[in-house]
Image (cartoon, rainbow, N blue to C red; front, side, top):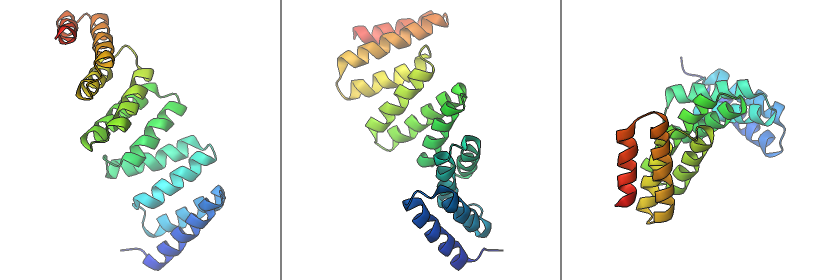
Length: 178
């Protein structure tokens, strides 16, 4: 049974006004009212998640953004907030994977600078993993930024050496020489 669209709109408008004034608890209450009408609404879920983040209710915020991602894995706002929250909650491996996925989505959308930032976050979380270094190298090659491309290829090669994958490490070095 569909929810009451008028009650939903009224609650969302009130939530937006409270948010504008940084009244997070009141805004959260209104988003919850809106979600009572339409529980799967991504805007209401994101709004509620944002309110939870502002009040440092990290796990509740994560729950809202993860709920949205389950229904729409390509929602970059929810994915970005999820990656950030994984970091806050010290779930480094989950944060790493989320930043890689986020970078892929940004890259596919032609948003290179945002993809680069997400790959850099992934590198910070797992500096010895070659995957984000390879992706950064390809990005820098496309930008004709050869010095950064070389640095990233060599970092990827080091990551492969740590894994004892000499073939992959060698391939990275060959790319540098080309």
